[in-house]
Image (cartoon, rainbow, N blue to C red; front, side, top):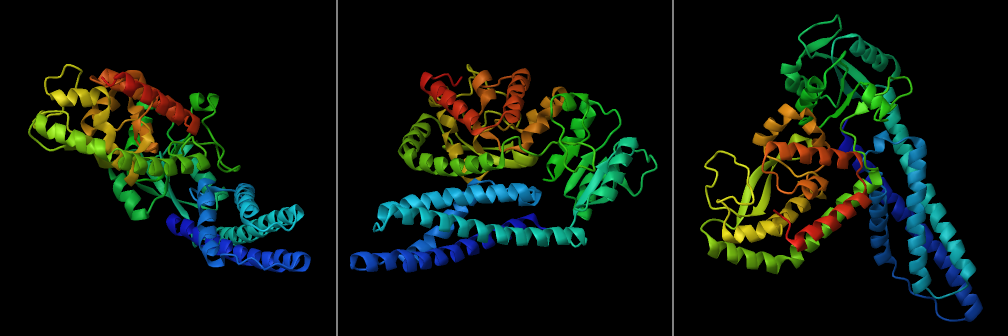
Length: 465
């Protein structure tokens, strides 16, 4: 099963639906509005810009559908959620078009505009939902007949693992249990046993695994998060059996009524529509920032070049979403070869920092080139600061839950850096990590806005270090 192809199919059919709707709506306007104009006033018939609107309307519809969050995980949305998402998006599009027409049209009567709004809304909702319902029925049929499936493994060989495996086999149509993976090199009597955790990469790639459920009997926190750390880099859905803490805090979710509740490690806490708005905001704001700040980029590039020998920009490998590495971009604030191959944390009085570099760090100017990382999707405006693998390996010894940061894009700023500032020790990194974990559990657009406001205040007060 190719999830990207299914999303692309929804996008294509949403576009086709919008074209059909707009053609029908333009015919409605021509035969209702124009006829009334001709009959009542004997004036010329308006010449509507049909082809321009036929091009703009579908893309406007796709934008609203995207912002509704529908394209993030359409396979996991129930019929009710699909219905509600479609009706809300159709209402927003129809009302927007209604006001555009109200301003630009020749007035027949206000009653006509209400008819127009109702006709556009009914057409848009009916055609769009019909296509989506058809695609959904196709998807459900392919899952039911076994043509499509979500290949799943259960990590564990004890009673909990056997229970989850039996529930998948008996009650879940979409998932196929490929087998079990031993976490302690014990068999436990489960079949088929695919191997142990040392073979996890081979098992996932060979069997095209899309979902892993960790079902260990009495697992310690360190053992649980050690396994999660190994799984994150494969970009698969990760779930585990809840302990008392997850049950009491409401983290456990019922995915299927016939299955035990599970805790999803990879599902974001932000609603889908907010995730879509967040990403679009990242793209738009980073583009604007790169354009508006280009004179400042040129100015600081000259200052850095005059201040010390070396390149203007500094590339450094960091670990981001799904545990994947990327190159973060910064203005160079240290002398060349300051680390000599051995990572060292920086502090406010670090002798490796150049004179211009101290100013750049104080006002966080050295971070501005990361708007490029945001634009290309490596980072977000708000999210946990990405770290180097060298320090992550040390952090997980004390805080094995660091892997929880991998579920979202790292950010230019977050609550952790605001509270802690530059982290010049592993202890501060762990303290910052705890704030970032709290941020992830409480993600929202409003929270992001508050963090951005606090960050701007820090920049203007020069509290960067």
